[in-house]
Length: 251
Image (cartoon, rainbow, N blue to C red; front, side, top):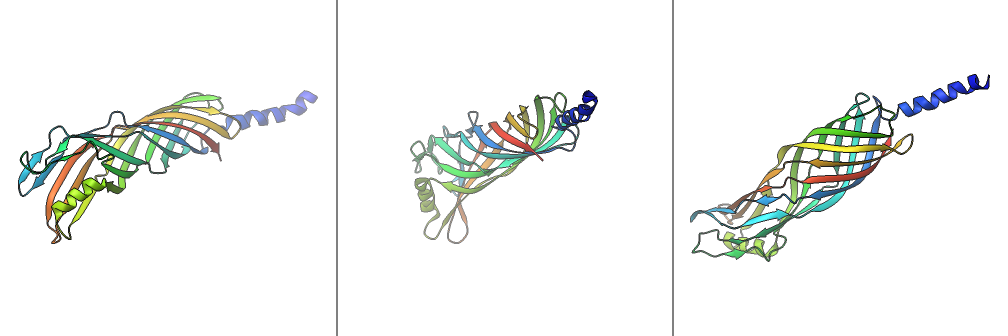
């Protein structure tokens, strides 16, 4: 009789475990993210003015690695398929450059970039929407997963090195202005990781994401009358690897 009496309790415990990451589950996760820009590069700076269009050969740039705080919101459509929105605090990116800029051609003024570090900084906003497949049963302790997603990245607060900014203001002339921008872009994203069930509602997770990311940087010197005096352009390839470790809670 005791065995019969305890059977409903045992069944309830088993069902509670089965609901861990099953259809309808919603999990909020927070943690730290390391962003590796080891594959980043920039094309030689191209400058256009009344003097013509010139390319400063040998100029290039890289984005330095950084970290930020990430949050992810995961909803299980089925026991194995989930949608996941990864977002968080926009990281501050630093662009370091090398080479010598000759915006008006070889015979004109030049500016070495090697000592102007960083050449520019910006805040990046790169939310990613993933579709993920979780391997194993919903109640499994360890669940590897793969994901594919889409990202839209835009940038705010673009700031130039004071020396570089001052040189451009000289070109713009009295009352002139200097403007800098980075183009937004849609990008694919590829994700792999593992989720570990700590308890009924708590999870630890770790993942890595690769995102082929590119942006066009435009820096202009504008005269007081509104006429663009000088336009500088470069295409930046970022291609970051994003490592994430966090703790999640199932609601």
